[in-house]
Length: 141
Image (cartoon, rainbow, N blue to C red; front, side, top):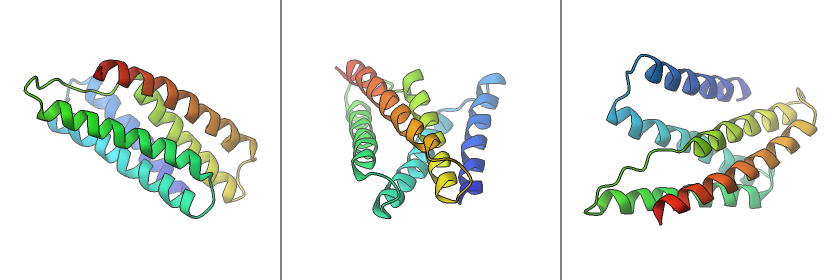
């Protein structure tokens, strides 16, 4: 699982970089990429929390924020104003922190990494989660 998750995280970053570098962005890609990220990360947080490998409160915060963002994006999509709701820099940083945390946690559970790495990762996830949540809330309001 560690190798597969690491592969998914790295290729997601490369895909975004290539799209921006060669101006190969599309509306469909802009819609599907964050959904793919959320499916991968939400599923990982959910499974690891249900297994007891991570604190459930952390998974609740991460998943709760994602549900609120999806709800806000849906409301904006259905509104007459049709405002775009692209991911913010802080939101992207939050996604990277979550990917790094999952890799560190699974690496630790597999006996490859010391416990300090997932501990640091957990607090980085919380910091970026808080900052990006405030940013998204300000944009919605």
